[in-house]
Length: 125
Image (cartoon, rainbow, N blue to C red; front, side, top):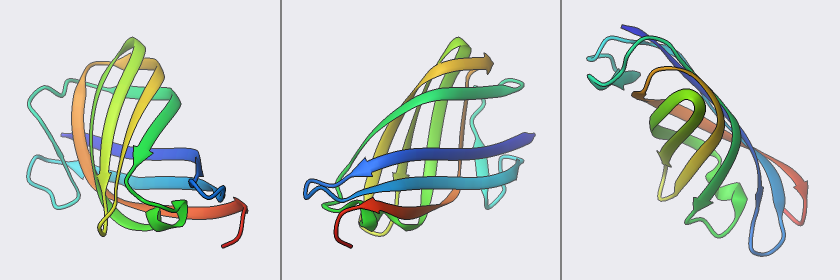
């Protein structure tokens, strides 16, 4: 049992030059192994925290297409130097992110329903 939560803030740039903040969040959800909001694998041990720089790729042609609900599955190895990867799959779109940074705790895997908001910075929307 435990808690799972996720917040990702990126600057996304479309091939046509549109740029936006892409913020994806999953509210902390109880993890029981059978819940409808999140799940864990047997590899999860104790407490984990991962923060750092994130890099991503996606199949969308414009960053605005990333907005909306999705499902996220994550796995991380977090001990000193942190490394995490997650795949978000939405309505015909996907985005894969890798996070490099500082980690605390043990390795773990989890998943949750997420929502992505897109806030334009520049370009024609």
